[in-house]
Length: 68
Image (cartoon, rainbow, N blue to C red; front, side, top):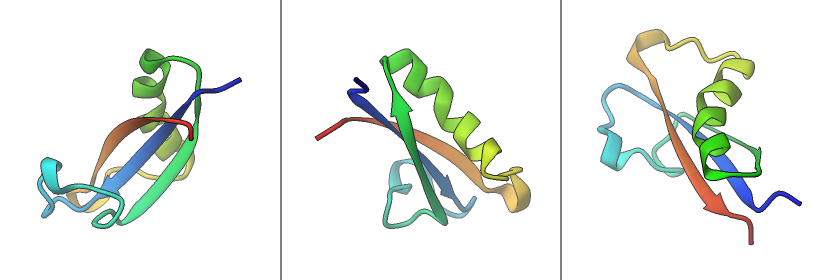
């Protein structure tokens, strides 16, 4: 059973990393992970699979949360 949720936040370059959140993101992509290490790697992978190419200076911020 997956106990960690990967959250890939796509944020505009004008949003500083500490301010990048679900509320300020251009897009939010989620997926499962089994470990924290897997979660950290999966964020950019999820974004790339969804078509994110890093255009216009946007970036990916990965968050890992326990499944509720």
